[in-house]
Length: 308
Image (cartoon, rainbow, N blue to C red):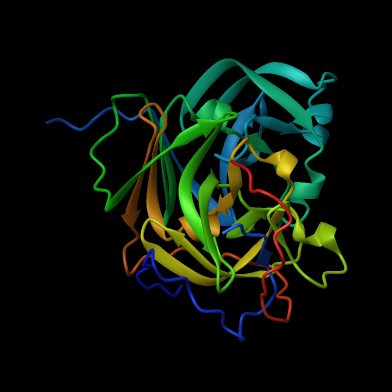
């Protein structure tokens, strides 16, 4: 993944080789005790772990960008659950949590591309009580109780803002001659590198707008994205419906971007620690099944004020 310093005074130049149009509508001691740890794997841009919800054991997406823990409708029906809102036991990373709220939902639109059935989603409502560490090379997930996590040698620490039960951090996007900074939801279950609020971005000439949105198969290219002083260029991106975002969010950052670091989500202290992955341990390819779209990005005329 290319990287170079990002200067606040310089916007990345538009490259005619950018592979698809995603145009922004811009207005310019002893070891600490461990709560739990488990192996994970990286599939279709998401972190997946073995877990159990209400006695339904299987593969669960671990998603800091999902506000609620979910059980797949087909799995719930097979286990004899008839209600769509439940309180169930959740087991993940060695933890057993009793009486946690769980919603039953049809996950087929989200999980159809996975090679094995997805039983559900472990969401931020569970994770936000802990310090969460995620590393993708090799893939490991650890959960620590507040104040019990071991030292973490972060190169960069970012402030987390919680809104609507979801963690957000500051980042910036550019489509060539213009750039915009804003808050982005951090989603370890995100299906592409970056998604932008569809009221703030567009893909000119797209004939299938639904394929550009969450869990769609198209991956228009985003010219540049900056996070923690690192500039990433020509990323696979997409759109997200404004209604799916918490108030004030410009978009969603997915695991294909986050995988450049080892991550510590210190939810109780509202901090995200970023530590570089080892040069000899890099995560696997992040974009199976993605389709590039030809063309080059260009700005559209502004249509209104951006979200605050």
